[in-house]
Length: 168
Image 1 (cartoon, rainbow, N blue to C red):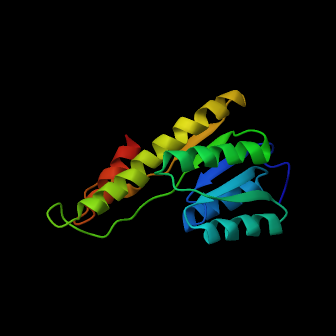
Image 2: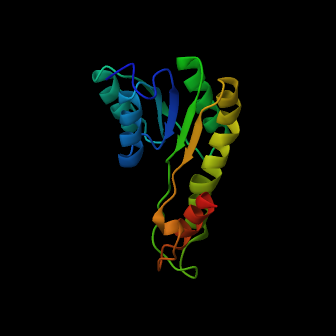
């Protein structure tokens, strides 16, 4: 991994960093020179991606993070700043893909989980990260949505609704 890539000197926090999309983003950012905090609710998944990055001569740490929990979201941002001295990039990838169901059949708990992770999660991460990004002189926030946020898909009510919210 190169320390002189496009993101050299940057510090990125990637939620859902232990998953396929988040992991790919974390690896790419590290390959471009950023230090990366790999945040995921699944500890082992976050540790695996962070380990792959460090094995490839990149800089990364893993953090168990529940983006829907204010204390956990704030702690994840604090961990990035403590590990790397600043924060310049936030990528909100973490998502809850709830079981299929119509509005009649979908349990309220599944609806609430989708909103907590897919909408409240990015809100909380931005709430705690943006002051640090500003203090570092600026940077970027990337909120990952889905093409399913642009169209209704039968029985994907909660997921489509929350991804539309991210887009808007």
